[in-house]
Length: 170
Image (cartoon, rainbow, N blue to C red; front, side):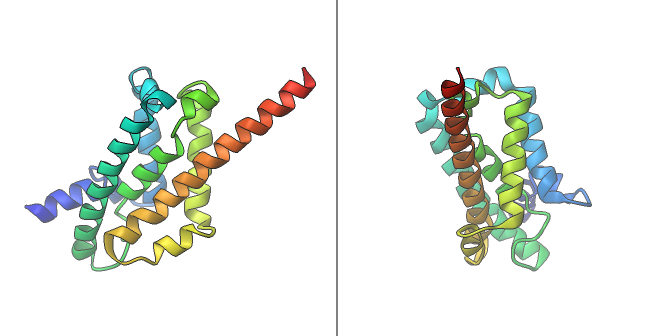
């Protein structure tokens, strides 16, 4: 029963079991879910709610460590491709503060966060690759957390550069 719960959570309600590109599907499911509930979710991604946002993320990451450790037991390998709860967490992190930087959870901002997160998750630049080497569920989760942070920082830097350029032009 517990292993079934770990599989359910680890695969993000079996999204990770879809053949093809499960990591991309996990990220896409997260973005689509947020797009569908964006009016209600938008304030949660604003700066004023960052403590609550990060507390919820911490809970998700801890749940992900628990679930992905069990999934490793089920699938018999480290970081099985079916486990996408790490992509869900990383994708959410990439959206941190996006309402204050890009004006909300618009289709464009969600697409940008999706592309940047997937880029950092697939390419795994330093330090993402280092976290992936950690054992068990911690390694499964932390490389995607790091990729999400890099995507969020890239969005912030891009918004600042764009704002600076626009203020000079105007």
